[in-house]
Amino acid sequence: MKIKIWVSGISIALLGLGLAGCGSQTKSKQKTLNVTATQAIATADPDKADDIVSQAAIAQFMEGLYTTNQQGKIIPAIAKKVVKPTNGGKTYTFELRHNAKWANGRKVTAADFVYSLQRQVDPKTKSQEVGHVAEIKNATAITAGKKAVKTLGVKALGKYKLKITLAQRVPYFNYRLATEIYPLNKQFTTKYGNKYGTTANKTLSNGPYVLKGWNGTNDTWKYVKNPYYYGHKQVHIKQVKVQTVKNNSTAENLFESNAVQVTQITGTQVASAQQGSLKNQLKITKLNQLYFMLWNQKRSALKNADLRRAVSYSLNRQSLVKNVLKDGSTAATSLVPTGNTTNPTTGKDFNTDTGNLYPYSPAKAKQYWKKAQASLGTQKRTLQLLTNDNDINKSVAEYIQAAIEKNLNGVTVNVKSVPLTNEISTLSKGNFDFATLSWSSDFQDPVDFLNKASLTNSVNFGKFHNAQYEKLIATITAGNQTTKARYQTMQQAAQLVAKEQGVTPIYQTAAAHLISKQVGGIHFTLLRDTLYRYAYWK
Image (cartoon, rainbow, N blue to C red; front, side, top):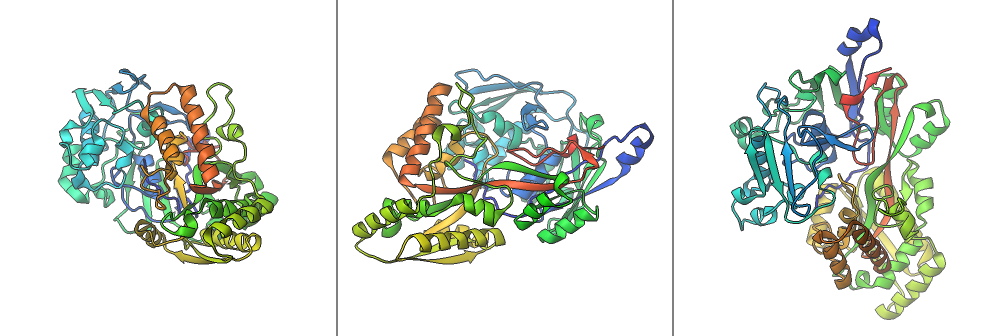
């Protein structure tokens, strides 16, 4: 599965300029749109990008077999239609459009997809996002060096015909095709080798825009309309300029002065905007992201399920999102974000069926703490909470610390805040008691969150292991169940992981954006930021 760890802050602000009427049509198209990002692009290589800002940028200038519409629904892109898989759901055969071109004028062909996919699984590429293609036949074995790259289950059946064969049926594979898998032009890519995607000049686009003005380290760049894009007549933005703005107040000030038309705000600024003059330009969107705690099973105290239960019951998640986050985030009720999946029979949300699996109960917290004290043979315990050192994560950690110490007499929590890269390194080495982390998924399926408590997933840094839970995850991923049966198995997994507190969800992230009333076509969705190709001036 895809490892994509979300860092709180101002995500890339997306906006577009469009037709404003016959008299101003030409003038509107010539305007430069100014937007913000929280950090600079790390890479423009779609086979290597593993951070949200880079992936959001790539979605503007690259396009795969499918894409998403303004509501986040999957629609055809380079493929002529959304196909129905054959061979028990394992084989996808695509007819590609003949008018798709690279920004250098060359045709986009089936061979471009074969090359990109083979490059991604090749161990020499050292991709951090091989999870994007892990379900394709032989991908895992190739990445491990056990099979040749050419054995990957992807084949060009002609210049415009492509076949992808999976190892097993994957219900969410269409999302992979729409948001994670892109083609690459072999001639251009091999020209630069490992340097491909390190600057705008070493990047070749096939989407609505071309990346310009990025030297690999600068904090500003541009998206310029791609004249070779097959749908260029429906793209109303000629040029978009992006600047990195890390300060939340600065971003809001830029918006208020109309220096940018869309930006993201967090914390108290959201509550202020909801009550002030900006309320009609504020849009809050739930994201397919979950903030959770993981527990180091190598530490005797944290291996104790009663202690983990005590901590979970100590947390008033509703109070956290209302009084600390204040950004539209919602309290987690299961290990799956609300809006991710619905019951195939009734249409009800996954979390409506689970109910609230993580309620606040000081009484139960004390009850489970007494059980933990008895089994651990101690009345007191000092724990260290590891977290990312950005402001939001530190505030959440302080809230968790206070809640535990208030409700569990004898427990002392010390917070250790470090940069994200240091946190991941520490987690990987197992040098922690418990920690907070975020997970974001580019496809809507509960398994990408449920497997965070499975040994099959690399993000299970705490090494939680429950044989019954592993069987449930194996059943879910095997691809042999009916849709209804699979849904029921995922419900069972959500209930079991809550009972055992394998990992403990805290809240579902939301993004609060300020969007200028002068602009239309801006639609943030559960899965991704808005795409410029749909935007227009009102």
